[in-house]
Amino acid sequence: MSISKEAELTGMQKASEAVAYTLKEMISYAQPGMSTKTLDEYGAKILSGFGASSAPYLTYGFPGCTCISVDNEFCHGIPSDSRILKEGDLINIDVSAELNGFWADNGGSFVIGNDIHQHQNLVNASKEILRKAINSIQGGVKIADIGHLMETEAKKRGFMVIKNLGGHGIGRSLHEQPSDLLNYKDRSDSRRFKKNSVVAIETFISTSSTYATELNDGWTLVGNKGGYMAQHEHTIVVTDGKPLILTEMNGILN
Image 1 (cartoon, rainbow, N blue to C red):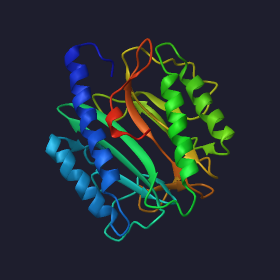
Image 2: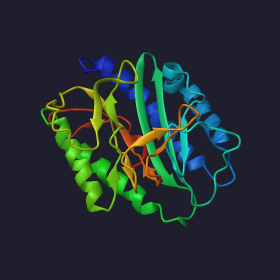
Image 3: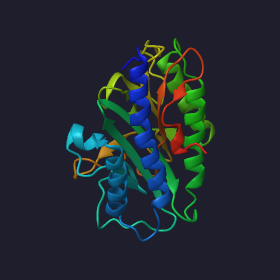
Image 4: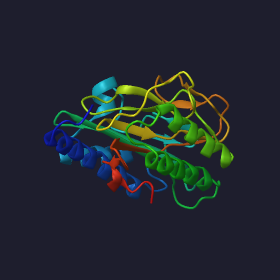
């Protein structure tokens, strides 16, 4: 969507606060021995307290309130009673929701407990790349140039990007134009970011895969060559200068 009046900005700020606070609290609540279903139910209660509704459930009938992916699961992991978090796991939580007709999206990867499997470098790279990408976005900037920045920064750190996942426009629904805000340079993409537009910018930084493939459960995505992936995501408003980060309170870049 494009922000054209104060009421729209206020609506986006409220929806973004709901998802950002929920993500922050879920990350803090997660601990070894907990099931991903318990973690999801905790997040669902927080969203409900804001009066917000799960976006993946509303839009796609996703079997959970939030997406929780563990270790080799890249994203869209289904919360489950049988999936128990363990020390050193790489966790990704993606929280998106609708509130009073406005939609916001955010996500973050983190290591639970001690980093016994050395995932933290991947997590840090994803954070740094998202920060650089957001700081480089303003009205008129080529979308493909941001993708180029993301892939270049990933390669500098010894990682790669997932080429069939990307950020997206958001606001009045979960996925809007511009779609396919990719983590690499699509030379055929001449689009530019537009001032006042709302977009969800996200990283998909991988250790050994370049494409995500779907498991038989119809939801969970893993790497075509295995390995691990970190994702971090903010909902932002594009401006003439630094973007307005609507989900900043989630603290994922801290």
